[in-house]
Image (tube, rainbow, N blue to C red; front, top):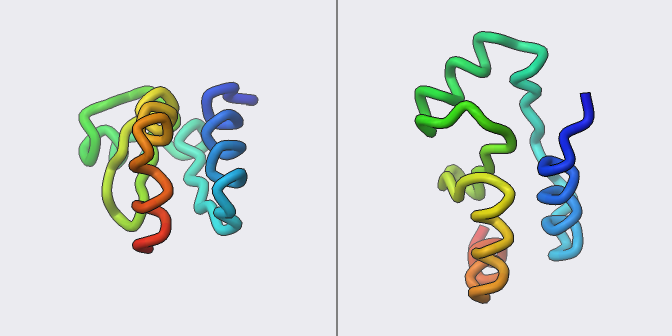
Length: 77
């Protein structure tokens, strides 16, 4: 299953020099989906965490970048 929002989020992170992206395929593992919902309160993917901090989905990641807040967050990790 190809998720366009997941691809867009990964592309944005890679443009910022992020090489190590841990992907948890909740579509293949129902227990992981339940865990994601417990952590985030959301059922949609992707749900993005940077250094353990939940930043939201693809739209929130893009908004974070547009505000100039993504690069410093990535640099801090």
